[in-house]
Image 1 (cartoon, rainbow, N blue to C red):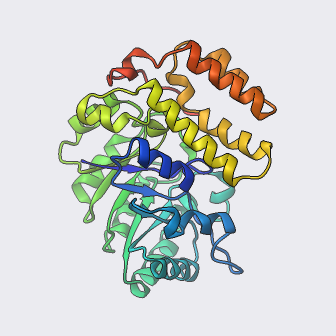
Image 2 (cartoon, rainbow, N blue to C red):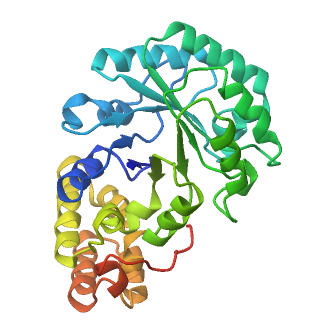
Length: 326
């Protein structure tokens, strides 16, 4: 099985990825938070910083591009190829209303003729691997059959399917029957993405799709960075290891970001997922959220590590109950 780290906007940037690779690793592909070009520029400064090869040494990184204009995609992809990248990913999955209203992300699924023309253009122009991360439709699951027909016309390196509709955002249960349709009818290699939070989630998925070869995980890795080790070998998450991981990321943000507020914002984002695997974490999570300076932040974090432990199930590498999506 290959494990992919899903892009999480604002969190899984190169500083996070490098720390994760150092302390946990076992990721076959990392995907960048989406690059959103426009007519005036290819990369925002933070996007460029995130894909610079020197900031991603030793990891397999796939830049993800969010656009509905084929010329923008081609231009960015060619620039990335010049940097040494052999694969790019098209985002047809983002359900955000601000993105969808512009016909991007899963909003692209509203006009399959336009999507078809877009794919024809980029595959004609580019000599590199192109994968797609997609939703199964906008409003109805019945849309997916026609969507899949469009994808089947092109030699995708991979089709990464998050089996939810755009309108569902991250709520409800993924439509596994649609993924089964993809297993039966897709002409391209498949990767599953969606609600893989625990080892038990992964095991249940493999029972349903025993021939599956790739999975993409996002919040599961953010909440339990040792999830791959748990799945592969039953190894749990050590509190001391997690403390080192946290300290590495905290130091990296303090070194690269200007001002306490920017560091605090990033670290509060960091804690939004893994704080929930600690015992009796609620009051500590509240103190972290309410910290107005780094001194109070450090006090709250030190108290959490001092007073509480990683939940027994996670520390032993067994399953915990899934936690609600933010």
